[in-house]
Length: 405
Image (cartoon, rainbow, N blue to C red; front, top):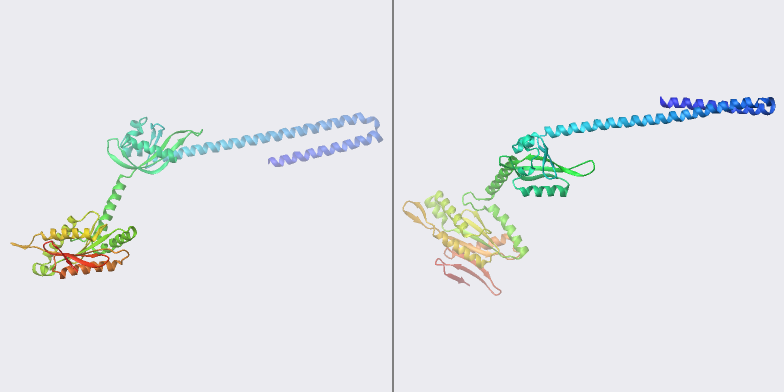
């Protein structure tokens, strides 16, 4: 509508200018040809016409300027209305988020003074809103230094997300919380406080810990022999590969022991499998007592056991093997009342040769164990290699060393 009015005004001005042009032409024609004496009259007419034109143009410019100012005023008013509506909408949303949030929300000053909290925050920390406003947020930290560390983390990263920390309820109870915090700034860009969101994850962490324990127990059940409580044969090859790779990489010695109960089949046939299981269980206990924390013991199968001794030469391993043999020999079994039975074990051991295949290594130790069986059982049979010869050593039942060339 405004554009149409402007076009009409412009057309009117063009008509006036056209009439003035005709008047000037007529004036000049009359002045020199028809009515030389009427010059003054036409001058007045021209002056009046020119004045009208000037007034019209001025009025047009004033009107246009007023319309422009009015349009700007209207736009400014509309922007103010939209800004106010947007601000009110933001405030309403913020208020709803702050009040209705299921997570605890708290606003504090730079020195930790509590300015505002929602009900969820108070529920988590077991306090009353009216009782903590104006108080220090430090009262909810299990250790005062924890807040210092947390604040430094917030300022260094301009905020943190899901920061796990132990906090303290108003009654002193410890809870595990996931805390997210950001810095609050004024319109001038000055930081004046912190906005913090708190979530109680105590139960979640408890469930996680229970799950980890369950998984750990499941892994143990899958790799541990239920009878002897030693690792099973499946885990033996898994761990052996790891240790052999480490030995090759760092050029460290490792020795393998293979144990076999002497005359175990006869014992089972005479006294039954229940008593036989007791013997196996007792051997597992003896082995555990004689090993270091860094060693690994396995029930290889039936009455056979294997032991991995990382960072151990065959000479040192022979000492451990002899200790196991002697300790197990002291164990007393009473499969029937009034009858004590003693059991023995034969042990073969060998030190790993660099880059030796795993199967070849196990087979070599197995042969040494059978060599001990052939030498009378209840022995420790080991292998020593020198530059000129190979000797097989074993211990007789009295503990004296006998060397077989």
